[in-house]
Image (cartoon, rainbow, N blue to C red; front, side):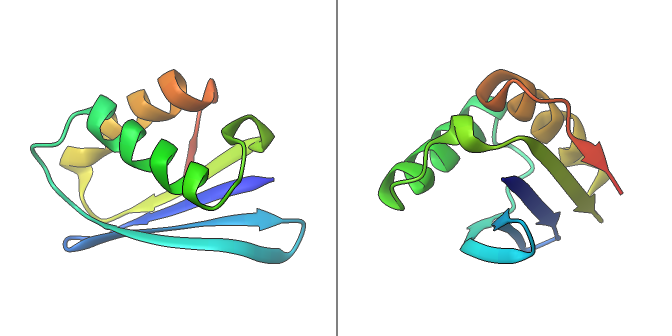
Length: 88
């Protein structure tokens, strides 16, 4: 599965693709003060609620218009998914 994130000024929209099919969709607030752990724990809860194992994620693709959050999200991906994300 591929996890995707679109980091906007107000929200971070994220989804999970199984092949070309979108299987999950979540939205959280963009908070420039949140830490990588806070974002990671929030995503863990959303995955758990949807009954999806985070270990099923094979890749992460991120688009962003908020450069100040990119390092935090990059760090979260490495810590919580064990994956180096691709920023596009």
